[in-house]
Structures are given as C-alpha cells and as structure tokens.
Image (cartoon, rainbow, N blue to C red; front, side):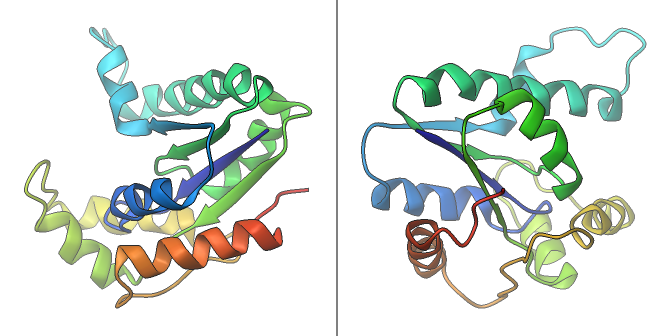
Length: 168
C-alpha cells in the first residue's frame, strides 16, 4: 500500500497527532513509533547519539517495506528531517509514500518538550539546533501552534486522501 512519514521537530506533537490519526486511517494499518527504535541499541560503544540516528531512521523505513508490500498502510512517527526523503526513496523503491511535516513555532515546541510527563527536554540550545533541520526543504509544513491533535489529524487525513502529502 503506502508509507506515511509523520515528522517534525521535538515537541511538534507528532505522537499525539498520530494517536488521533490512527483512528481515522483505514485498515489494514501498521504503526511504527520511532522512539521505540532507540531501545534496539543496547550498547553504543564509541558511537554517539547523533551517529545512531541515521541508522535508526533507515532501519524503521526498511521495516515499513514488507508491511506496505503486504497491503498495509504504514504510519511512521518520528523526527525525520525532510533531507531524508531522497534516502527514503532509495529504501522504499516502488512503495509510494507521503511526508507530513508538523512544524509549530520553535517556542511552542520548546514549551511542549519541557512540559512532557515522560522524557521532558529542557536543553533549549539543542532543541533550537534540531528545529533548524525542519526549516528547509521542499515539504510544505503544517504550522499551527493552537490546533488540537484531533483537528490536526483530521486535516492530515483529508490531505492524505487528496494526495497533498505524496512525495513524487
């Protein structure tokens, strides 16, 4: 079927929107919550976090291929910069995919990231640096600081049905 990347900087609301979007997408449906892939690495050795990030992104994309080829629509929820699209094309080959970029303001992302119940992030310099990875590219972002996850999910579902997020 297809793969949907739902991306954005830390604090963009990706997982909250994904939980709502899962209710709206038709079966058969698979959900890859990217943060779970961090648990696949048990010992980093000399590698640093930033060295493992590309490996994890490629791994979750590759994991989506057999699911999509078996008729599943696959939703990948992770902070994948738009610059990854060319690599995604190579991994997915003939599998069609959409790229949804949630990008509320940096201030909204910082407030959300620091107020999380689990995994709060208060390193604002790091957040600001990571935010820049989502500012450039040919993907038109959804920039909305005030919309609730359910309404954003509805907008995304409608956009998916209309082909607005399809990467060609």
